[in-house]
Length: 341
Image 1 (spheres, rainbow, N blue to C red):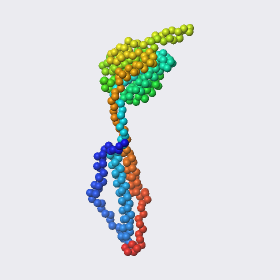
Image 2: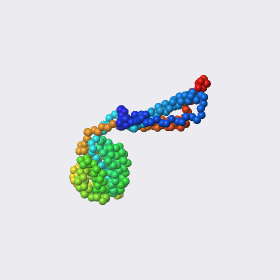
Image 3: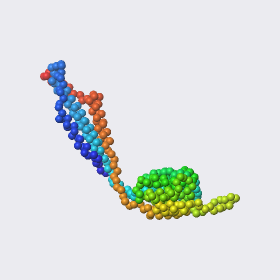
Image 4: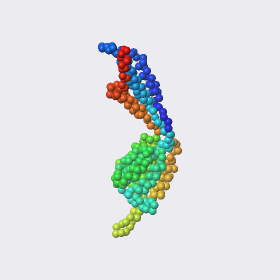
């Protein structure tokens, strides 16, 4: 813990009040109109009390000036050095919230869970381990919107992903719009650090942008897209009259593979939670977290303390000059002094 002045050159203002000594003295007051036999003794006694009060005000004014100059020099308390891992990588997560993401065909701990629950479970761990990366979150259905802009606050990204609900953005799937929105958000980032991870379980059947055209634009903008197809290959569901039937996944793997290929990314298939965890493990290897560190020292401004002290002293001086504070009583004039005057 160190204490420093951010603007130490302001301390050069300390001797400025001494310039008042170079100014001409004020004219003396006119002599009194009435004369008393003991006037000289009385004047000497009152002058002693006045000098005491004047010295007190002068001392308070000097202390107030000292505090003002110290406040102007900006005293600071600098804490210990903090090291933060920094990679400079900017990763957008685009998560499908269409109606099919509530299908309970993923298994975790021996229990069937929905596709979105599996994504939240595994993506949450991925987010927690991306220390030093700037993360953002896009949710899409009929439309795509930014839930969290790029930030180093991983806890917020994870919290808002956990709070996402099926149908929040509509029931259909606008993959092209999600890619276009991610490109817009990543465009201001360094070109080598732009990454989009797209998670979906269906076919692009909504939106204004074709997914493959959006992929071409992403390739021109230097955005690498890793696509993840979520959901089991097939699922047994109840049918009419108590019978069961096998439902095939409607995942458009060809389009997802083409998107990844065009942008220099990769396509992954996640048929269960274990496979999804493996995919995020591979992503950590493909897009490793940098070992670089950024150092900084927390700084706390302290100028408010001397500034408040100077303000308080100024108020006391003003009250004393206005006669609103008790004054020091001058010594009584001795009768012997009056007689000898």
